[in-house]
Image 1 (tube, one colour):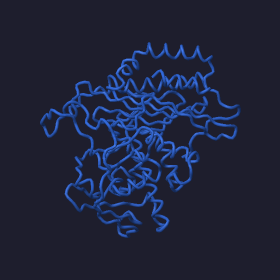
Image 2 (cartoon, helix red, strand yellow):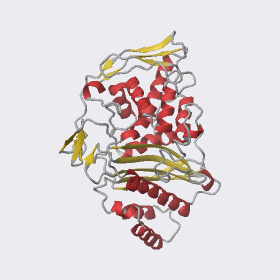
Image 3 (tube, one colour):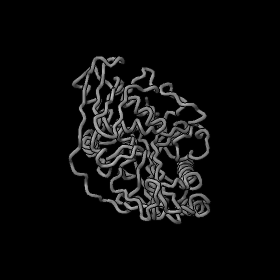
Image 4 (cartoon, helix red, strand yellow):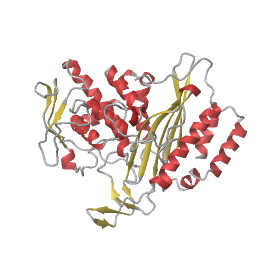
Length: 415
C-alpha cells in the first residue's frame, strides 16, 4: 500500500509538501483499523487496487493517471457479476449493428427466447416491463440496477461465446473471457449452446424483425493463462465436501485493468482511439450512463422497493455495508461482483459540485476457513468494510488535495 501512496505523491497532484504528505498518509494507513489488517495479509486476501486520478484541462478534456497496488493481471480472481458490464455493452453494440440492416429494430424491441437443448429455458413474458415483454434494454437496466443474473444470462444467449470473445478483443479487453451463464449450473456442454430467439415489431409478437437460430460454439477455449486457478482448501459439491481446492479453469475471467477499461470506454469514449470504442446508438449510450449510477428507487421501469434495495445497494466502494444513503453530492457509476468469497467493485466516483472525479477498482477475497460453497464468507465483517473504507480514503484524499484548473468543473455524464 505504501507504493500506492508514494505514487500519488510523485504524481504532482498533492498540495502538501512531499515529505509532510508522505508521513501523514503513512500514519493514516498504519493506524487504520479497517484497511491495515487486510493489507498485512494482502496475498491471502488476493487484494488488488487500481486507482485512476482524473484531471481536466482548460478545455474540459479528461486526463488520466493510474496508481496500482498489487495489480496482477495473471493472478486469478472470480469476476462474478462485474463481468456483466462489458456483456451489456456488447449486447447493445450488436443491436446497433443489426439496426443498421433493420431500421425498425432497436434495443427496446420485444424479444422472445425459446429453448432447443437440455438446460435451456424460454422467455415469453417479462413482468418487470411495462410492455410485459422482454427486451435487450430492459435486461441492461436490470443488470445495472440490481445485478440481475437472469438478465445477464439472456444477453449471453443473445451474443454467444464466439461473439463475446471477438467483441472483447475488438475493444482491447484481451484479459477477459466470458464462457458461461450465472447461477444455473452451466457446464461446458450447456454453455456452448445458445437459445433460438426472435425480435418483434409488436408486443403481440406477431411480426418478427430478426430471427436468430440456436447455435453451438465448437471452437476451443484459450488455454489458462492465470495463476491461482485453484482456490481454497476444499469445497462443497452436490452436498459432499470435496477435500481439494475449487478449480476455476472453466469459469469466467477478467483482470482489474480490463474491468476499469470497459467502464472508462463507456464514460469517456473520447479518451480512446475510435477503433476501440463501443459503437452504440446514442439512446443506448445514454441508457448505460444513466443506469450505471441510477439508484434502484429512482427507476420507474423496472420498479424496486427501497426497503429491499437501499441507495447503497450494490455500491461497495465508499458506501458498502449497512443500508444507507450515499454521501451528499456523490454519484457512483459502477458494477460490482460478489461470489465464492470474492468482492469486486469497479467504479467511477464523482462529486461535481466539489470538482472531484476518479476511477477506483478493487478486489478482495474473504474466506478464512478455506471452504468454498459453504456461504461462510466474511463479506459483512471484512470485505464490505474494507471496500467502504478504501473508497472513503481515496475520496477524502481527492477532496483534500484537489487542484482543478480555474473555471473547469466536472461535467455530469449526460443520460
